Length: 311
Ligand SMILES: NC(=O)c1ccc[n+]([C@@H]2O[C@H](COP(=O)([O-])OP(=O)(O)OC[C@H]3O[C@@H](n4cnc5c(N)ncnc54)[C@H](O)[C@@H]3O)[C@@H](O)[C@H]2O)c1
Image (cartoon, rainbow, N blue to C red; front, side, top):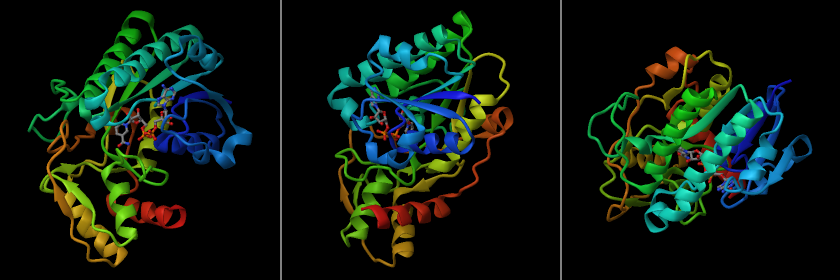
């Protein structure tokens, strides 16, 4: 039976990955400091989990958490672009120092794979679409910068120390357990929670900014594939659906699915926000055998169902 360490396993994506791993018979250890993650995200799984509460900024704790693990899925991060513009030092400590600590721990534990969670934010605002992995990294926020550095460190640990690394650049993930209450809530949970209360959604900018919205189950599949794929040397791959959807379209679809007629309230764009982001996913298809199985609307229906039950 393989054993995984999932850092950030109490978060939105991490807790879905933990479910996916347990369903497939993995032993799972979670390292999380609950700064944005929630115990409730793992509640019914706790008897089957090895939960280590603490920070990836604690190097000794990372080493203890990694011991005897076959694969590390490193998701723990300060995830907010706007917060990184206000407090870049905090983002640096968690995302850069924390990633370095986890790579050192991976090397010491001799894991067979280290899967690093990167982000489309590494591409910045380059107008060229779709994004392909060979493009120059050009982040426009400390968050994007921290993910680019994490990728570089993962690649260097692979080349210099033989830690087998796969970096997955997620594009705008959504689905059950994504927090709508955070001050920095992502677009879809923020829209759904307001619209379910009959309130108009707030849109920063003109709403014509677009993203490659990716349902969380697709990301879980990508991580499982990344754990076992045969790769020669360090790999960096986009994980998305390969489709571009504007924020205005999300609101139109939500109005249809919810049976509402709520127009957005437009506010000025936020610093650090990117105008367009759409992924070429052919590398992940080829090397990881990745295929998104849940499309945008099907994912949105599942997400709405979860918010109806849990808000
Ligand atoms: N949600 C998206 O659209 C998206 C897109 C691209 C990349 N990502 C990346 O996916 C990963 C998971 O993000 P998420 O959306 O699930 O956010 P989340 O905030 O729900 O999850 C982050 C988790 O990391 C934990 N954490 C934060 N700092 C920590 C620390 N110092 N030590 C230990 N644990 C810590 C949090 O408590 C939380 O459980 C992150 O690396 C994020 O950058 C997310």
